[in-house]
Image 1 (tube, one colour):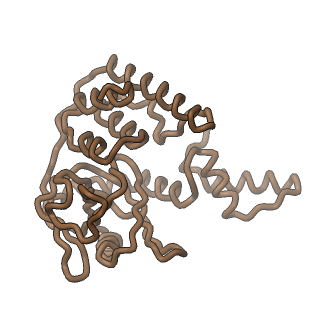
Image 2 (cartoon, rainbow, N blue to C red; image 1 turned 120 degrees about the horizontal axis):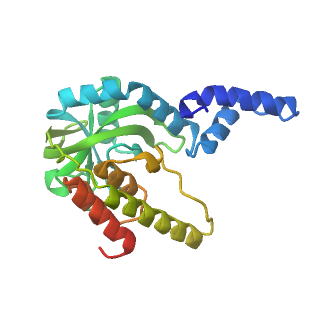
Length: 267
């Protein structure tokens, strides 16, 4: 059975099949249809996942080798990204655009820093949380409304020691921040998966579209407590401080337990 890495071949097959039934669509439209069939919002996001899947090992090795030190940085104010996800970053800020461009063109890590307040337009070190994430900019495009969009593969947590807005760009100095090893906790993992599915169906019914949420990769296969916690945390609605607290929780079992508490409404 084909998976998302065969998306282009699937799109060609779909287009040919529809053409045979006198339904004409463009190649781009077939790519968009295949993306939705695979549970991804659009082709840009899916193509970034394909690239990340192919280059994941190299990117991870590069990021490990260059993690500590000064890197281009981007402050965000409206969400908290977690390791393992591909996050779309949007900005109009000249300094943020320059930082993204330097990371993208130079194949350098980008430091994503979460602001403590959404009201600050030019944040400094005191305006951001000390735990952020490191990622790789996969695509960088200007949108019709003037904003820039960067699809970014989030690799790992990082400790932000300094964050400054220089003349034309944001720069952060970071240090290694290693998570604690994840022990084998199969009962906890099964329980949290059950809580999440129940939570998701309740939420979907409230919104008027009762269907199973799509998570890539399929979380049924996940056996790592920290990875599962990050996947679920990125898909549930929580306040910025609550999500930041999960990001800053380095003990994977404790993080998963806190996710479970949120799912049950006991946090």
